[in-house]
Amino acid sequence: MAASSSSSQDPGTNSRRTSLEPVLSVGRAFTGHLKCTQPPRCWGLHVRIQGCDLERGYICGIMEVLNLQIGRPVVTFWEGEIVDMKNHTFYTGKWHATPQDDINYWASFSSALGNAVQADGGNSWNLSDDPFIFMRWKEQRYVSEQTDSEFRCMAGFYYVAFSIKYGTINATYHKPGPGVTHDQEFSLAHNHEERWGVSSSSYELQ
Image (cartoon, rainbow, N blue to C red):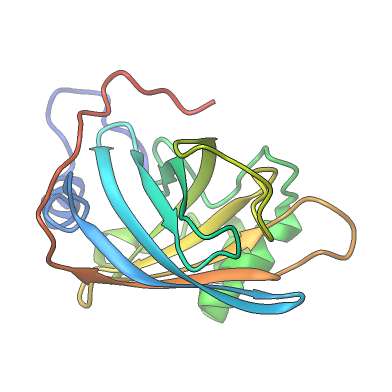
């Protein structure tokens, strides 16, 4: 999708943005589980959106992991890229992710999407009518006092698929390194806790 070169924007872009604003609004909260396959483990997970700028394809929030052996939650601040084909495409281009990594991870959500990314970078994929929002989330720093825990690692990032209709989120973690794939994932559902958050205008994704 090409960016508009004038002040008038494509009606499809405006419609898409309008449909995304409520589901990615500041303060929206989600609850679910974080799972690790190597070795098999499961933790409780809370996520809250703290900032969102659809014009820039930017989102950020807090991630809280529960039920850890250290006896208290681990809280991190994350920043994300919203795939909109204007600010961010399906190709990551950093964080040690190769084009083939991108194809494989997007295909884990939808084989048709993986094929589209492989064929033309996903340019033919109709995002304006897609029932999912595709993103990448990367944890940037700890918010809680940090001690060693059994899984935390900020070297990688999450490929994220957000269902607009159901308010659910599924994500798979990409951790750099040979032979390490799909070893961590989370699933979340919208909850109805009190909303809170901050403007994202001062944040920049590193």
